[in-house]
Image 1 (cartoon, helix red, strand yellow):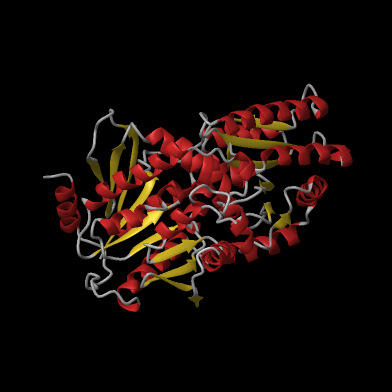
Image 2: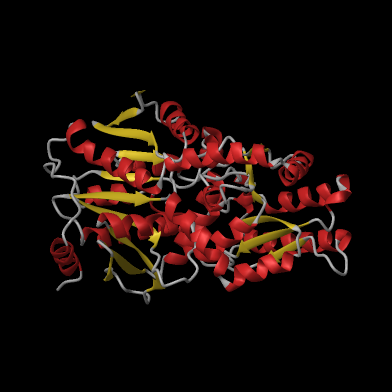
Length: 489
């Protein structure tokens, strides 16, 4: 069995350079270890008029990365248009930010068709296909039209919204019907699964039993697969990170003060303005916290061409300035605000240095920063995770201090509680969370999804489906033969 993974972007790892996190950080280790082939955008676009995708392939451990230059005539409207000005805000329940355009939707479908043609180069009788995230909701339908009968799975890294929100998306019915070309649709949490099932039941009038729905003779299975991290690897990285220059500088600069940390993409779903207001409120109602701690907020810019993100960047910078101006002094700046990315090794060291980790999104599919913060802690003297109840991670890490990110006073009190929590309670909470992470790792997530998708070969009636083959990692020669055929060698 050869797993073909597909996502919008493919991360090209370089030693100790920043990794964007999220999907990229999750899939790289899985590809290295499993022998999968990961297909996605190179980040470049073709000149207008280019029709057929050409793949550039490089080995990665037991697997390979295959990147494709995307069609210049459609990529902007696909990515900044329909994907991130319609689907992203809708999936994070921000219908006020939806900006719909019929041409954007047409480009979304064109890019999905273009990627299907790229993926077809890697199709083999023993292949199974695993498509990732909201960029490619309709990719399975395109692959089916091109004759693919092998199992195709989909995993949504974002939340899936309520039926009322989903019906605000232009062409929502067409999108969901196209998704029924997948054999397996995976979600981060049971709540997301239930929202999707409710749409199928009430909008499409489909019958489902045991999370299996039927549409035009096809069975589609729904399941929750909470994504994990490589706990041991990240913990070891955090332990070694003390020797890194940037980590040593951070610790020296604290001058004995405590540190709270937040690491997020600069996205409106992350609740960053509310987090800053909560800190402002904490300094007001607990004046003893002034000069006793620093907040380090790393906010990595993203989607800077979209107006909603530009407005957020201006709002957050102004808000940080107000809080620092109101509470700071000549020898103390309450909030250290940084707009750049750091390597995973540096972040692991920052997390370990912080007594408090703030992960307070308004809505998040999972949020791996929460899990990384826990994994990075010193078991003898762990920090405290303050976590939004609306992050998928809260379903597993319920020993964190759970907060409502819309409740400013509640968050302020939670941060104060975290800063003053006794060691015994910190250890007790951390032990519960680290045990949970160790039983739901990145390898578990990858293996569970691939295993469930492989079961489709025998559990779902489909006479024309390719015969099942053993779930083994392809040898280097097999991988090289697949790659060679895909790039026309």
